[in-house]
Picture 1 (tube, rainbow, N blue to C red):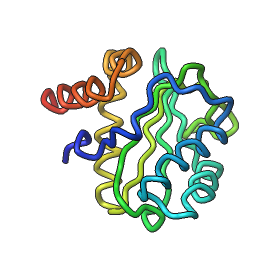
Picture 2 (cartoon, rainbow, N blue to C red):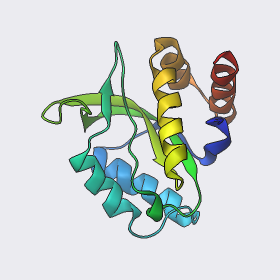
Picture 3 (tube, rainbow, N blue to C red):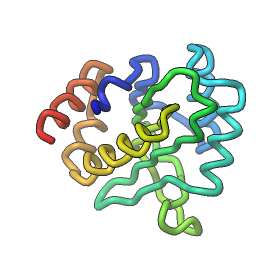
Picture 4 (cartoon, rainbow, N blue to C red):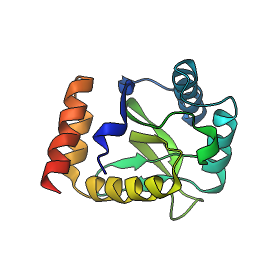
Length: 156
């Protein structure tokens, strides 16, 4: 299953400036909702899920987050890839009492539970390699982000 096929150019945001996690979720919800990808409950449900099951991951030199919510709030599947101009705090997946400064977010809008598990596995493999994260953080266009995923998937 190719991650690249789920990428939505309208939801690839490079050097996005958000003051905090809530601002990020609101901005991305509006983008997805305006394109008919999610229903009205998506925003409250992704925030709710993030508060119960945080998605921040501290890797070697970078931190990423992979927020997602239940499939019934997604009308059309997507993966949003967002690099942040300034890091925002996400609670850690393995210790919700701790936070990390996230610079790269993969927001999942998947409505097939088996695909969500497969995509999460693939993303975890990709982010384990610091050069993949560096490449995504330095990307300057949607096409470049897509090409990075194509190259990563070709190596897998």
